Length: 85
Image 1 (spheres, one colour):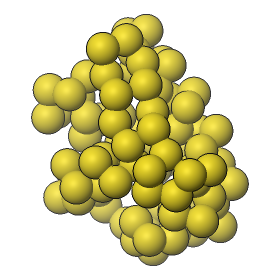
Image 2 (tube, helix red, strand yellow):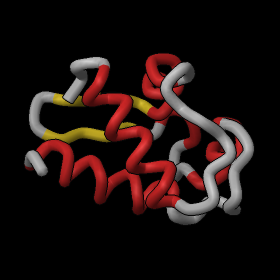
Image 3 (tube, helix red, strand yellow):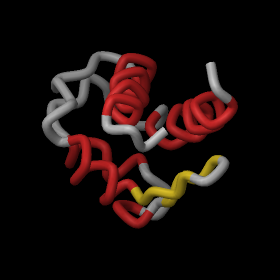
């Protein structure tokens, strides 16, 4: 796993781990984020807000998610497939 992917994984798990799972859609995740949609994730040269990620990955995500790990794995795979990480 690349350093950027590992760093983002940790940040995503911290941010989304407090969500009420299962989550049915992106809006279910907002209350868990420390700064709502403006929550920023940064690792290496990558910097994204939660809102930017939602816009870029909307078609990549397959809700519902039962766990934070399942959600985070899907986010990271989507970022990788789009060439963002």
